[in-house]
Image (cartoon, rainbow, N blue to C red; front, side, top):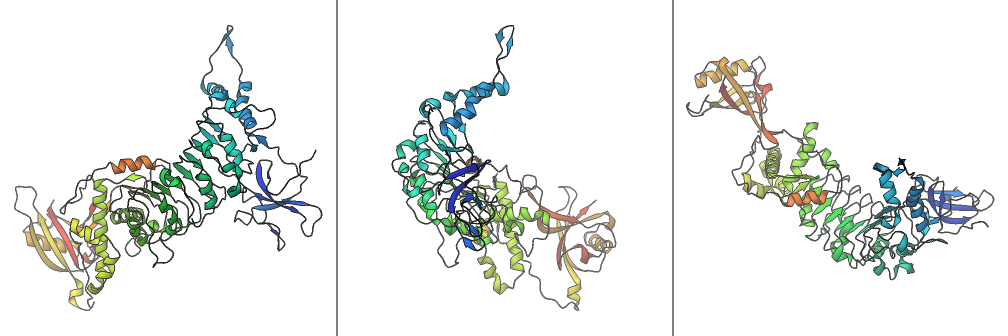
Length: 580
């Protein structure tokens, strides 16, 4: 008695699962073919068209998701849920051999003991039967699920042969303590008209975690299923080719959903997920691995605004290349305290005009992110301490000063407009130093002189106060000559002096790109960040070189014939003079 496949059937060939999309003839060949869409989109040879003729359309957008196979090709036999669980877990009993010493049964230890405990089906708490060719709840002769494994709390039914979600509901209805359900990689048909979902709420009311990854369902279908879970707090809908979330009824999700994963989809803007603003209890939003580059498609479009309950946002591995995106986050996510934004183009090139050292590029990106987002408590899984924030904000403010120095005074407002926190940071730390270089004719003497501000530091506290002197020195003078001038100004032996150029810039002394392990522990990190110190830094705060991650850059001018113009930058320098 042969099996006659129908369109929509789920088949498995040597472990490779597919869905029948077409049954009929193919031009240029003889006989009947099955047009199938493989769950693995790289397994096929085309997308449902052959030699310019389209025979069927795949859900997958991959060009190699489909194939034609003969109906006579033997497919693996599907099985019931009860059979799959019994086959996987109860079979362990048969593999267990009783070990006896002097006619006494020895206690099993290690993995043997674990396997024996797993085999006690009635005590199972976690059941994983992914890829087990399950197509139904029961087959002839099966025991009731409520007797076979009634204590299951976590259930993984991913990548099986289900056609209807109603079959899954029938299984769950006999698992009264079920809390977590994974249905990843299944291909359900007729979701919006599935009678098995109509009164599914009572069967699914205790389930809190649901995974629907790689199902290639639409957002409407995902929400239609998710709303049947009246206590749902975590939903994962990653890798579903979603590019936009239209307005759709959210039911009880508006008051229960806390965490939503939409990773590895095709969103290009934050506005594409603006309909999620209706989820008032949502705290964690995961958008990793999309193609997001801007907040909105059109700059004139209003920014989407999400509830203040949303604290954690993951936009890592996207296409963010502008700091305007970061600046808009507080408007879109007014409650945001934890962010992951690493592995975006903006982190590879945070400041094209001034970022030159590859070793500090990621550190600078970290500093700019913290400096731009005042309420951030954790960044890339790392908690932001008070010292981290102070260092970042001072560095960011100093860099704004460099950008101001690079433009004429009349265009300062244009630069300041790009830095929303500029006025706030100036209130905290004072305005940055703007050393705007004047255009000087290189033929003039002024272009060949460096204005040097010498500061003489005594050896000990009991000595005279710090003495300051300012003079102009030709760029062509070597360091020996500069020391001679310093010695004459301060009445000291030139070769007994040390000259230290204070650059006014900052150097990192610890990495800022060390992400904590990429895991699901961001909630714990967030809590730590929220419990962090909130001490006011004050206007006169200065970074502590020992506690902070950044220190002022200083360069000692070594004795030698090297010219002053090659040792310091620009036409003005601050040099500290010390006795050896």
